[in-house]
Image 1 (cartoon, rainbow, N blue to C red):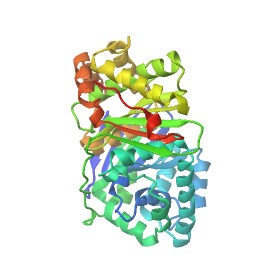
Image 2 (cartoon, helix red, strand yellow; image 1 turned 135 degrees about the vertical axis):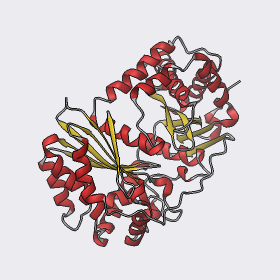
Image 3 (cartoon, rainbow, N blue to C red; image 1 turned 45 degrees about the vertical axis):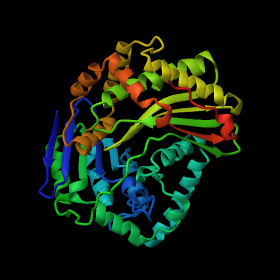
Length: 419
């Protein structure tokens, strides 16, 4: 059972006890991500995450790493479009020490100017590494074209120019503006008691203030008017991403989207994998994915193939989308798909990091704990007609964005053939 405590300053603490395990996963979540980057500081949310690991008033960056390593634990962080998380996973007996390190780096980072200059070099290498990894890079390129009127289209890492210009005051201003007590969720799952986490957190977070500076970005949602974009690059394969409207985190159709995505390209038994790879041998990698945000989302198909198979691969994808619109799931049983989703969900809950993440995300997006039974019930309620209706609504040529990366011109792309 999940338990929640809210401190007087708005910091939320939510935990779930798993006495059958020996570990504890503890995270500090902030309801801010790259979507909140100022327009002249693209990548500052991600860069701020890096800087909090570079030393505090009590510990150097090396000491932070050594103390967690000495516990046999894990200390990491992640910046997404809409949230940032700092977390640790350790043995239950090491919870006090790990929490002290985690809370210290989150609350007491000194943002040293010399460390900042060194970390800029690190993040610039991270950007270059992404650009050298086509299957990662095309995700950013697709987002840029699909969310072209929104900050969701800006890469989480930022750009070479923006990151290269960062100064200490940019990080300090971002922290004071967005790392507010009312934006923080502390989540913990494992072999511990709720009161223990509350005690550890209260002593450190009780004096944290709520910022008056924070302003929500007035984003424009993407205009789904269809677009094809070819990015030329001298590489062996052509990487393809084709996407359309997805669901927001609060969209009632979200459950139909999850089922649709699983049928289309969510596994080895999916329509896309079986047709494009197993039957025709056109690709090694092909799948679909669903990215959902607070107010919008994208459902996309990714594939990689040689230039001479691009047209055929797009035709095969088009055929599968057309089949879905007609209620033809390629022999896939809706009942089996629901069982697959349920199995994936329940298996993921055996991992304390996944479970800790689920608690925090539910709090951030819904303001409450969402029991797994409720999720399963919503999935079970999805019917064939729901999937067909949704497919007919979103798989329209005029609404779809097609992006390719590789040695190809626009004529080599071909086109969608959707009724």
